[in-house]
Length: 366
Image (cartoon, rainbow, N blue to C red; front, side, top):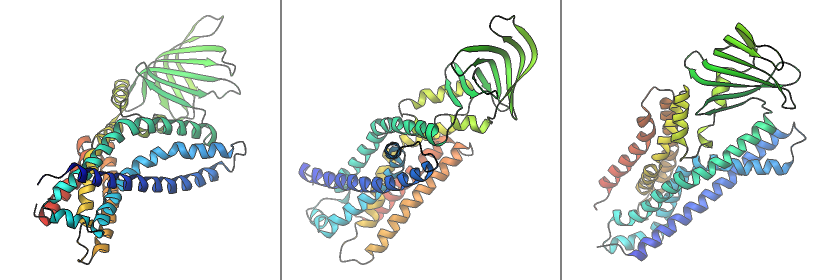
């Protein structure tokens, strides 16, 4: 028997409303805790108004929200199936001759649609908000003065000089890893009023402890003759870890911009494995959400006359956290290059989907 459109819409609407309410409730709790933490961090800086703290808390929500999505999909599906079972609606649907796969299809369709919407629309918007949050955090809470960016033209880096006034902008066309060897380097010196002080060009520079060491150097200064030196040292407090951590985090990169940024990083000489794992993980989200619905159906569609429903709910919650830690662990292995990127990103979703599918085929008769 073919499932009716009215029934499909009812199941899909019920599940979507439950998911939305649960997600909003989780975000409200997270916003409260994040705001308290931001107030604690800002307590030592009296120049930061409370309105800015509240704004930063809202800007950070998309980062946490994307982590909460699989939990919201799983727990709302568990609640929806439990709700339909307790009201005997699923019993009536089964008695009418519909198979479990027919009334699972609308719910899984909503989950897959939300997964596609999340990576194509919500992720780009969230990345803009998270990027704004990190900018405000760097300016008001961390007081960072170093600025680093990577473009197709190479690496751009801004740092304060060791003198009382001024800063230097350093540009390198390419970086050789490992060893942090910069090729075709230029260092532009400016005063705090942005007036030009001088320029240093070099074929190669190496980041050493406490300094950039330039080789084969040409020094230009206004109204003076150029000077050639074999070596030139630029003091710095930066370390390779500082530079790598200053790059755009995966959460601040839009799904649509990730491929181009990954290509730019690799052409410049940096390792983009972490971003590749993140990109593939985003692509696997619809499959992961469908797997969460299957797992929820396994633990929450037990008829009311049977006992052990609470134990199955506890198992479902445990499965949710297990999937989260497994995904994080495999992504960490993938980012470090110990396992292939595709395996790190897709295996959690694929394992959960096959597990839920296998259990449902075992428990249900069609």
